Image (cartoon, rainbow, N blue to C red; front, side, top):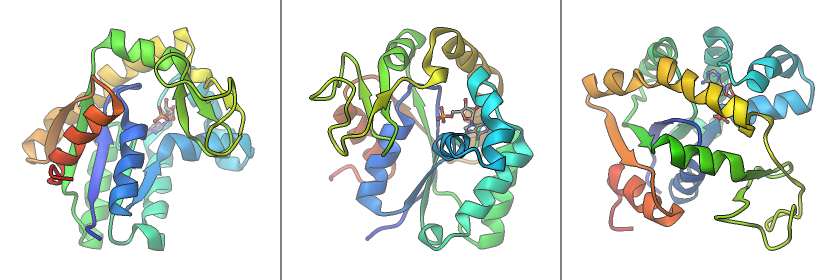
Length: 220
Ligand code: AMP
């Protein structure tokens, strides 16, 4: 199987998690969703969870040093050795610099930085209707992609819930944080010739085709 080393960035609701999972299925590289890791840690009330849950609830970014340490450790695990799909990391220039350093040391440079984009009205509609499975992390949308049975995950029967940070106030805060702290990654990766900007508007399948094309797998 081909391997892949990519980062996904884009505003909340652009479809990073959904598309990262599809790439993972196709390429077998490990998908590392920093948001999922932090939410799991918060639920399990681990030291990491206790340290970071306040940031998530407010829609703020967790400090760079915490995130970089977490991702550096995760990338050392065997399933990430050849390939990875980072979903939600880096989110700041400082994180991107550290990632570059870590990957250089490991001799496995980034192949693509996938920047998913969509206008704010689309993002807000997606986020406010999003429902996530507490058990397996599968995502649904109350209108665009509802589960067969209300509140129950089709895949594993787990309970569907609305993320605390998918409520209206937090959505606005997250969009602001994205513009201020994460959007500058576009120029950062453009300068390194790694940026692949992808239109995130459309169905999951339409966006998937664009994503696969961007990583050089358009035929499949
Ligand atoms: P996500 O699931 O990617 O939308 O992330 C949810 C939340 O986790 C964010 O709003 C941040 O509070 C935190 N988070 C996830 N990834 C990062 C990161 N790379 N840097 C800082 N905070 C992060």
